[in-house]
Length: 323
Image 1 (cartoon, one colour):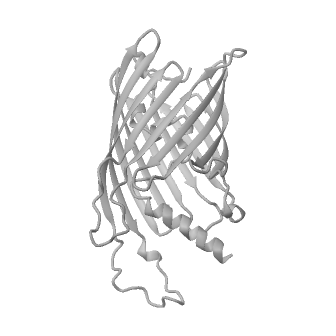
Image 2 (cartoon, rainbow, N blue to C red; image 1 turned 90 degrees about the vertical axis):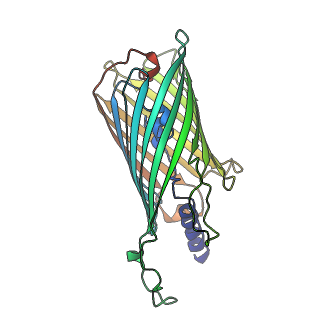
Protein backbone atom coordinates (compact mmCIF):
# COMPACT_ATOMS: atom_id res chain seq x y z
CA UNK A 1 0.00 0.00 0.00
CA UNK A 2 2.89 2.35 0.80
CA UNK A 3 4.35 1.82 -2.67
CA UNK A 4 0.98 2.57 -4.24
CA UNK A 5 0.64 5.83 -2.32
CA UNK A 6 4.13 6.88 -3.38
CA UNK A 7 3.34 5.96 -6.99
CA UNK A 8 0.10 7.94 -6.87
CA UNK A 9 1.83 11.00 -5.48
CA UNK A 10 4.51 10.72 -8.16
CA UNK A 11 1.91 10.72 -10.92
CA UNK A 12 0.07 13.71 -9.48
CA UNK A 13 3.26 15.68 -8.85
CA UNK A 14 4.62 14.80 -12.29
CA UNK A 15 1.47 16.08 -13.92
CA UNK A 16 1.59 19.24 -11.79
CA UNK A 17 5.23 19.76 -12.78
CA UNK A 18 4.32 19.83 -16.45
CA UNK A 19 0.83 21.21 -15.95
CA UNK A 20 1.34 24.91 -16.38
CA UNK A 21 0.35 25.94 -19.91
CA UNK A 22 0.30 22.25 -20.82
CA UNK A 23 -3.22 21.12 -19.99
CA UNK A 24 -3.49 17.41 -20.74
CA UNK A 25 -5.50 16.44 -23.80
CA UNK A 26 -7.86 13.53 -23.21
CA UNK A 27 -10.52 12.70 -25.82
CA UNK A 28 -12.28 16.09 -25.99
CA UNK A 29 -11.12 16.54 -29.57
CA UNK A 30 -13.01 13.40 -30.62
CA UNK A 31 -16.33 14.93 -29.52
CA UNK A 32 -16.62 16.64 -32.92
CA UNK A 33 -14.35 19.41 -31.67
CA UNK A 34 -10.81 19.27 -33.13
CA UNK A 35 -10.50 22.97 -32.25
CA UNK A 36 -9.42 21.62 -28.84
CA UNK A 37 -6.14 20.59 -30.46
CA UNK A 38 -5.49 23.22 -33.10
CA UNK A 39 -6.47 26.85 -33.83
CA UNK A 40 -6.48 25.92 -37.53
CA UNK A 41 -10.00 24.50 -37.13
CA UNK A 42 -11.50 27.85 -36.13
CA UNK A 43 -14.29 28.80 -38.50
CA UNK A 44 -14.58 25.45 -40.30
CA UNK A 45 -18.30 24.68 -40.30
CA UNK A 46 -21.62 26.35 -40.93
CA UNK A 47 -22.35 27.43 -37.35
CA UNK A 48 -21.16 29.16 -34.26
CA UNK A 49 -20.03 26.00 -32.46
CA UNK A 50 -19.90 25.84 -28.65
CA UNK A 51 -18.59 22.84 -26.71
CA UNK A 52 -18.40 22.58 -22.91
CA UNK A 53 -16.36 19.78 -21.35
CA UNK A 54 -16.33 18.47 -17.82
CA UNK A 55 -13.68 15.91 -16.87
CA UNK A 56 -12.92 14.08 -13.65
CA UNK A 57 -9.80 11.91 -13.64
CA UNK A 58 -9.12 8.89 -11.43
CA UNK A 59 -12.51 8.92 -9.71
CA UNK A 60 -12.10 7.53 -6.20
CA UNK A 61 -8.66 9.06 -5.50
CA UNK A 62 -8.64 12.14 -3.27
CA UNK A 63 -7.55 15.40 -4.91
CA UNK A 64 -7.33 13.75 -8.33
CA UNK A 65 -7.19 16.11 -11.36
CA UNK A 66 -10.43 17.84 -12.31
CA UNK A 67 -10.99 20.03 -15.36
CA UNK A 68 -13.71 22.19 -16.94
CA UNK A 69 -13.36 23.89 -20.31
CA UNK A 70 -15.41 25.84 -22.83
CA UNK A 71 -14.63 26.12 -26.55
CA UNK A 72 -16.32 28.30 -29.15
CA UNK A 73 -15.39 29.06 -32.75
CA UNK A 74 -17.14 30.64 -35.72
CA UNK A 75 -16.50 32.00 -39.17
CA UNK A 76 -16.03 35.77 -39.58
CA UNK A 77 -15.59 35.77 -43.38
CA UNK A 78 -15.74 33.26 -46.20
CA UNK A 79 -12.12 32.20 -45.57
CA UNK A 80 -11.41 33.12 -41.93
CA UNK A 81 -12.51 32.13 -38.46
CA UNK A 82 -11.94 33.02 -34.82
CA UNK A 83 -12.25 31.06 -31.62
CA UNK A 84 -11.91 31.28 -27.87
CA UNK A 85 -11.35 28.70 -25.16
CA UNK A 86 -11.58 29.01 -21.38
CA UNK A 87 -10.42 26.43 -18.88
CA UNK A 88 -10.26 25.77 -15.16
CA UNK A 89 -7.98 22.99 -13.96
CA UNK A 90 -7.35 21.62 -10.46
CA UNK A 91 -4.67 19.08 -9.69
CA UNK A 92 -4.23 18.45 -5.98
CA UNK A 93 -3.46 21.86 -4.44
CA UNK A 94 -2.40 23.41 -7.74
CA UNK A 95 -4.92 25.50 -9.63
CA UNK A 96 -4.83 27.14 -13.00
CA UNK A 97 -7.18 29.14 -15.16
CA UNK A 98 -6.67 30.49 -18.61
CA UNK A 99 -7.92 31.44 -22.01
CA UNK A 100 -6.89 31.14 -25.61
CA UNK A 101 -7.91 33.47 -28.42
CA UNK A 102 -7.43 32.00 -31.89
CA UNK A 103 -7.49 33.09 -35.51
CA UNK A 104 -7.40 30.88 -38.61
CA UNK A 105 -7.29 31.53 -42.33
CA UNK A 106 -8.25 28.91 -44.92
CA UNK A 107 -7.09 28.58 -48.53
CA UNK A 108 -8.15 26.51 -51.52
CA UNK A 109 -5.29 24.51 -53.01
CA UNK A 110 -7.45 22.77 -55.61
CA UNK A 111 -11.18 23.40 -55.96
CA UNK A 112 -12.12 20.25 -57.86
CA UNK A 113 -10.20 17.75 -55.71
CA UNK A 114 -11.25 19.56 -52.49
CA UNK A 115 -7.76 20.27 -51.21
CA UNK A 116 -7.51 23.00 -48.57
CA UNK A 117 -4.74 24.50 -46.46
CA UNK A 118 -5.33 26.32 -43.17
CA UNK A 119 -3.09 28.38 -40.90
CA UNK A 120 -3.86 29.20 -37.29
CA UNK A 121 -2.45 31.07 -34.31
CA UNK A 122 -3.53 31.31 -30.67
CA UNK A 123 -2.64 33.75 -27.91
CA UNK A 124 -2.56 32.06 -24.49
CA UNK A 125 -3.01 33.65 -21.08
CA UNK A 126 -2.53 31.36 -18.10
CA UNK A 127 -2.77 31.94 -14.34
CA UNK A 128 -1.21 29.33 -12.06
CA UNK A 129 -1.31 29.23 -8.25
CA UNK A 130 -1.05 26.99 -5.21
CA UNK A 131 -4.10 26.85 -2.94
CA UNK A 132 -2.40 27.32 0.44
CA UNK A 133 -5.80 27.50 2.19
CA UNK A 134 -5.89 23.73 1.85
CA UNK A 135 -2.60 23.24 3.70
CA UNK A 136 -3.05 21.41 7.00
CA UNK A 137 -0.59 20.62 9.83
CA UNK A 138 0.52 16.99 10.02
CA UNK A 139 2.30 14.90 12.60
CA UNK A 140 5.59 15.34 10.75
CA UNK A 141 4.95 19.08 10.14
CA UNK A 142 2.86 20.39 13.06
CA UNK A 143 3.34 24.02 12.02
CA UNK A 144 2.85 25.32 8.48
CA UNK A 145 5.88 27.16 7.18
CA UNK A 146 5.28 30.87 8.10
CA UNK A 147 7.15 31.94 4.97
CA UNK A 148 4.26 30.69 2.83
CA UNK A 149 2.18 33.85 2.91
CA UNK A 150 0.57 33.89 -0.52
CA UNK A 151 -0.62 31.52 -3.23
CA UNK A 152 2.63 31.73 -5.19
CA UNK A 153 0.53 32.81 -8.14
CA UNK A 154 2.04 33.61 -11.52
CA UNK A 155 0.70 34.48 -14.96
CA UNK A 156 2.22 33.65 -18.31
CA UNK A 157 1.64 34.58 -21.94
CA UNK A 158 2.42 32.40 -24.90
CA UNK A 159 1.43 31.46 -28.45
CA UNK A 160 0.43 28.37 -30.42
CA UNK A 161 0.77 28.04 -34.19
CA UNK A 162 -0.50 25.36 -36.54
CA UNK A 163 -1.12 24.25 -40.11
CA UNK A 164 -3.87 21.97 -41.41
CA UNK A 165 -4.09 20.14 -44.74
CA UNK A 166 -7.37 18.61 -45.95
CA UNK A 167 -8.05 16.48 -49.01
CA UNK A 168 -11.64 15.28 -49.22
CA UNK A 169 -12.05 13.16 -46.07
CA UNK A 170 -8.34 13.14 -45.17
CA UNK A 171 -6.86 15.64 -42.71
CA UNK A 172 -3.39 16.26 -41.28
CA UNK A 173 -2.73 18.87 -38.58
CA UNK A 174 0.68 19.91 -37.21
CA UNK A 175 0.87 22.27 -34.22
CA UNK A 176 3.55 23.85 -32.06
CA UNK A 177 2.24 24.92 -28.65
CA UNK A 178 3.83 27.38 -26.20
CA UNK A 179 6.51 28.47 -28.63
CA UNK A 180 7.99 31.07 -26.25
CA UNK A 181 10.13 30.17 -23.20
CA UNK A 182 8.48 30.76 -19.85
CA UNK A 183 9.68 33.24 -17.23
CA UNK A 184 10.96 31.32 -14.22
CA UNK A 185 12.48 31.94 -10.82
CA UNK A 186 16.25 31.97 -11.38
CA UNK A 187 16.83 30.63 -7.88
CA UNK A 188 14.71 27.50 -8.32
CA UNK A 189 16.39 24.89 -10.47
CA UNK A 190 13.55 22.39 -10.92
CA UNK A 191 11.12 24.56 -12.86
CA UNK A 192 11.17 24.01 -16.64
CA UNK A 193 11.44 27.13 -18.77
CA UNK A 194 10.67 25.33 -22.03
CA UNK A 195 7.01 24.34 -22.42
CA UNK A 196 7.16 23.77 -26.17
CA UNK A 197 5.27 20.70 -27.32
CA UNK A 198 4.28 19.42 -30.74
CA UNK A 199 1.03 17.76 -31.73
CA UNK A 200 0.08 15.85 -34.85
CA UNK A 201 -3.52 14.93 -35.52
CA UNK A 202 -4.40 12.99 -38.66
CA UNK A 203 -7.19 10.77 -39.87
CA UNK A 204 -9.67 10.07 -42.64
CA UNK A 205 -13.44 9.90 -42.93
CA UNK A 206 -14.62 6.96 -45.05
CA UNK A 207 -18.16 6.46 -46.29
CA UNK A 208 -19.53 2.95 -46.28
CA UNK A 209 -20.12 1.56 -49.77
CA UNK A 210 -23.11 -0.41 -48.50
CA UNK A 211 -24.77 2.42 -46.59
CA UNK A 212 -24.18 6.06 -47.51
CA UNK A 213 -25.45 7.15 -44.09
CA UNK A 214 -22.64 5.30 -42.34
CA UNK A 215 -19.12 6.73 -41.86
CA UNK A 216 -15.91 5.38 -40.37
CA UNK A 217 -13.21 7.70 -39.04
CA UNK A 218 -9.87 6.21 -37.91
CA UNK A 219 -7.47 8.81 -36.49
CA UNK A 220 -4.14 9.20 -34.68
CA UNK A 221 -3.10 11.89 -32.20
CA UNK A 222 0.61 12.26 -31.36
CA UNK A 223 2.07 14.60 -28.73
CA UNK A 224 5.76 15.31 -28.05
CA UNK A 225 7.23 17.46 -25.24
CA UNK A 226 10.49 19.14 -26.20
CA UNK A 227 11.71 19.71 -22.62
CA UNK A 228 12.11 16.05 -21.64
CA UNK A 229 11.41 14.13 -24.88
CA UNK A 230 8.22 12.54 -23.53
CA UNK A 231 5.71 11.49 -26.17
CA UNK A 232 2.43 9.64 -26.37
CA UNK A 233 0.03 8.48 -29.07
CA UNK A 234 -3.72 7.94 -29.30
CA UNK A 235 -5.14 5.47 -31.81
CA UNK A 236 -8.85 6.09 -32.32
CA UNK A 237 -11.76 4.76 -34.34
CA UNK A 238 -15.20 6.33 -34.66
CA UNK A 239 -18.34 5.15 -36.43
CA UNK A 240 -20.99 7.74 -37.31
CA UNK A 241 -24.58 6.92 -38.41
CA UNK A 242 -26.86 9.57 -39.95
CA UNK A 243 -30.63 9.67 -40.21
CA UNK A 244 -32.84 11.31 -42.84
CA UNK A 245 -32.59 14.71 -41.14
CA UNK A 246 -28.77 14.60 -41.07
CA UNK A 247 -28.77 14.14 -37.32
CA UNK A 248 -26.42 11.40 -36.20
CA UNK A 249 -25.11 9.29 -33.39
CA UNK A 250 -21.63 7.84 -33.10
CA UNK A 251 -19.51 5.48 -31.06
CA UNK A 252 -15.83 4.73 -30.84
CA UNK A 253 -12.82 3.72 -28.81
CA UNK A 254 -9.43 5.27 -28.00
CA UNK A 255 -6.14 3.56 -27.11
CA UNK A 256 -3.40 5.73 -25.55
CA UNK A 257 0.19 4.66 -24.88
CA UNK A 258 3.67 6.05 -24.35
CA UNK A 259 5.63 5.65 -27.56
CA UNK A 260 8.23 3.41 -25.98
CA UNK A 261 5.54 1.21 -24.41
CA UNK A 262 3.08 0.32 -27.17
CA UNK A 263 1.85 -2.86 -25.48
CA UNK A 264 1.53 -1.18 -22.07
CA UNK A 265 -1.32 1.32 -22.59
CA UNK A 266 -1.95 4.31 -20.35
CA UNK A 267 -5.67 4.45 -21.08
CA UNK A 268 -8.28 2.51 -22.98
CA UNK A 269 -11.70 4.03 -23.36
CA UNK A 270 -15.04 3.75 -25.16
CA UNK A 271 -17.01 6.84 -26.14
CA UNK A 272 -20.34 7.72 -27.69
CA UNK A 273 -22.26 10.80 -28.75
CA UNK A 274 -25.35 12.12 -30.47
CA UNK A 275 -26.26 15.26 -32.43
CA UNK A 276 -29.92 16.21 -32.64
CA UNK A 277 -30.74 19.42 -34.47
CA UNK A 278 -28.53 22.07 -32.81
CA UNK A 279 -27.80 20.07 -29.66
CA UNK A 280 -24.79 17.83 -29.12
CA UNK A 281 -23.95 15.41 -26.30
CA UNK A 282 -21.05 12.99 -25.83
CA UNK A 283 -19.66 10.81 -23.07
CA UNK A 284 -16.19 9.30 -22.81
CA UNK A 285 -14.79 6.85 -20.29
CA UNK A 286 -11.13 5.98 -19.87
CA UNK A 287 -9.83 2.98 -17.98
CA UNK A 288 -6.49 3.68 -16.31
CA UNK A 289 -4.32 0.65 -17.03
CA UNK A 290 -1.60 0.78 -14.38
CA UNK A 291 -1.17 0.14 -10.64
CA UNK A 292 -3.95 2.66 -9.85
CA UNK A 293 -6.64 0.61 -11.59
CA UNK A 294 -7.71 -1.07 -8.35
CA UNK A 295 -8.17 2.25 -6.54
CA UNK A 296 -10.22 4.34 -8.97
CA UNK A 297 -13.14 3.90 -11.32
CA UNK A 298 -11.51 5.56 -14.31
CA UNK A 299 -11.75 8.95 -15.96
CA UNK A 300 -15.16 10.31 -16.97
CA UNK A 301 -15.77 13.11 -19.46
CA UNK A 302 -18.98 14.75 -20.64
CA UNK A 303 -19.30 17.13 -23.58
CA UNK A 304 -22.37 19.30 -24.18
CA UNK A 305 -22.59 21.41 -27.30
CA UNK A 306 -24.79 23.86 -29.17
CA UNK A 307 -24.62 25.07 -32.77
CA UNK A 308 -26.05 28.50 -33.61
CA UNK A 309 -26.42 30.93 -36.50
CA UNK A 310 -26.25 28.52 -39.40
CA UNK A 311 -24.97 30.09 -42.59
CA UNK A 312 -23.19 28.24 -45.38
CA UNK A 313 -19.99 29.90 -46.59
CA UNK A 314 -19.42 30.83 -50.22
CA UNK A 315 -15.99 29.17 -49.92
CA UNK A 316 -15.85 25.35 -49.64
CA UNK A 317 -12.69 25.69 -47.54
CA UNK A 318 -14.83 26.63 -44.51
CA UNK A 319 -17.91 24.53 -45.15
CA UNK A 320 -18.70 21.84 -42.62
CA UNK A 321 -16.59 18.67 -42.97
CA UNK A 322 -19.48 16.54 -41.64
CA UNK A 323 -21.65 15.34 -44.54
